[in-house]
Image (cartoon, rainbow, N blue to C red; front, side, top):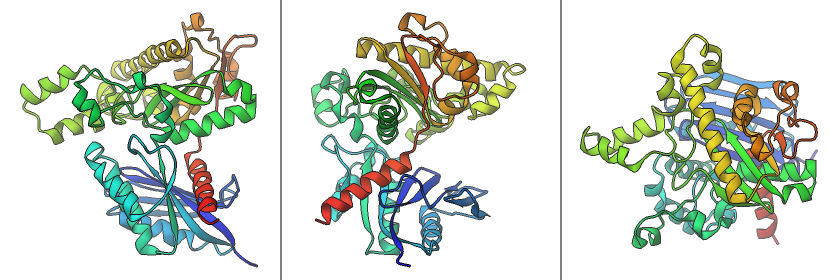
Length: 396
C-alpha cells in the first residue's frame, strides 16, 4: 500500500509541544499527543492514535525543545501507513504585514528572529522548532501560521495605544493572539449555525491556560482583549492581564525589581496562581472554593473581569448575537460560564442551566435573544489546513 501523504501540525509553547498528524484534506488525525514539562523535572511524552488508543506514555527527561521535537518526529515516522510531507507551525506573533500563512524560507526566519525582542518568552522556542525540523529532514516543507494574523482586520483605532507617535510607528500596537483558535471556532459556528449567524455580532471567549476574548463581525476580528503581548487583557492562569502602567513603574523604581524578575511576576506568578496563593488550575480552585477564601477570590476576580470585557466587546460590536465559550475552562467549567453570564440579561444573555451543567453545545435558554454555545477549539487542525493549502499553492 502506498503511504498516504500527511501534515504534522506543531503547537510549541514555552514548556510544552502539542502535535497532531493529519492526512492531507482530513479533519481527524491519525496520531496526536504532547510533550510536557520541557526543561523541567517530570518530563512527559504521550501520544494516541486516531482511534484514541495509547501509543506512548513516557515519563522521561525532556531537557530542551530540540530533544522534545526529536521525540515527536521519531514518533511520527513510526506511522507506517502515512508519509510526512510537510510540517506546520503555530508562531505566536507576526509583524504588521503578516496576514497569511507562509512557506518557511531563510528570509522569513530572519524576519521572525527580528521579532524576538517583542516576544522573548515565546518566539525563541518556535524558531527552535522550525530549525529542529530542518535538521531532522531538510526535504520536509514547513509552513508558519501566525497567531496574530486573524486580528490584522481590526480597525486602526482598535490597534492603537495612546502613546507617542514614534512608538506607534515602531510597531507598539495591539496585535491580539489566539487567532488560530478564533478562526477555527468561527468556522465551526458557521458550519453549525449557518453562515448568516457567523456573520453576526459574535464574542468568542477563549478561556484556557491563556485567556482572551474577541469581538467578531462578518467573520472578521473587530477587537480583542490581548494587546502587544499575550500578557495583556484578561486575568489568566499565571499571567496578570491588564495593569495600571504605574504598577510596573512602581515595581521597577521602588521595589528595585529587575526586568527578569518583573517578567516572572507578570507571566508566571500572577493571575489565578497569584491571587489564589499558588494554584493555576480552575478545577482545583473550584473544588477548594468553599473552604479557601483565596481560591474563592481568584474565581470571583476571573469571572468579574470576563463580564467587564464581554460588555466592552459587545459595545464595540454595537450589540450581541452570539457568545461562544472555548478552550479548557470555557469548554469544561459550567460554573465559570454561569457566573460570567449572570446579571447580563441587558445584553440578551440567558442560560439553560441544565444544558450548561451538561456542557451541551447550545446552552442558551429557549427563546433567548442571544445564542450561547460551547464549541471546542482545534488549533492543530487549523494549522494543518493552512499548511495543506500553502503546500498546494506552492506546488502548482
